[in-house]
Image (cartoon, rainbow over all chains, first blue to last red):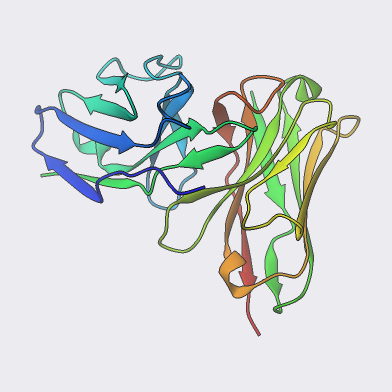
Length: 110
Length: 121
């Protein structure tokens, strides 16, 4: 049960686009379309931003999008805004009713 | 409005026990699998345990298997986590969350605000 691999940090300027990767294995990310992404501001609970690889919950901005290729999932945020600065975590179903999270990526809006 | 409110956290000595509770409201509790996820201070999220909507199936991360026990009382809309043989490395904020399905093979959806567990002598 090793954590999914994410970059520790990414940054971008307002208005730009950034992409955060999430690399797993053929036993988790590569096997299931149950990849989700969470946004967490300091001291707050995580919030679901993307589920089932590319679906957006009601109320989440369409600036957030998700995709997957093989064992790697990606979260793209376009038109960066100051309020997007937060930690982002990917998550994947890993079979046998277990769940894996990524190590988290700190997004800095310059 | 969907709400998940955790309670029961606190300071406990190594080797001790603690039971966390999560009171749910605003949705049909028994129709959704539930989970506990923890976050050590300054660290990332770690899945701890999950339980089906009926409560008939339970699942655990290797790090807590044999020490933690998840359960639910659908008549009280409450989720529990019994934590025994606690270690310093169990120190974390524990979040209660629901899956968007009756089974654990789904998406972790809405999260509570968390309750802090500190294991220290």
